[in-house]
Image 1 (tube, helix red, strand yellow):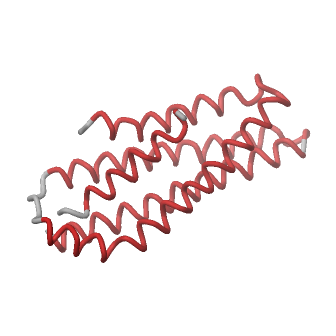
Image 2: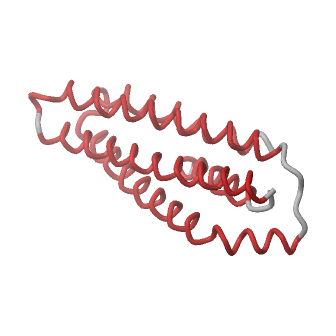
Length: 160
């Protein structure tokens, strides 16, 4: 449950942008969607590296490094979301009608990005659980990097 909390925070922040000045809000929503897609891509990179780590014992250090690098990029996605939220918080509040119009405009792109992130996160969690059964100590540094990345997203829920 805690693993999915950061996803909810990011999604809530994106949906909160829908109530913001049109051009600025559109830009922030576009940037948020890009960050969500980048986060999904980073999760996929981590998952793929861990899968290779499991299959190729001679290259474990190489694949753990690749996964760790992707986890660092994921952490930066969380930090970027914090910046987007700070910018969104400075915008004027829209009327209910404007919010509904914005929601219609951005719903498809937000839903698509959220679906992609959800799928990649679930796949990554399964891969990490399997890898920890094989070698919990070997994967512990990567798990810590993932926790740090997650904490960057969880900050979003505390900023409300």
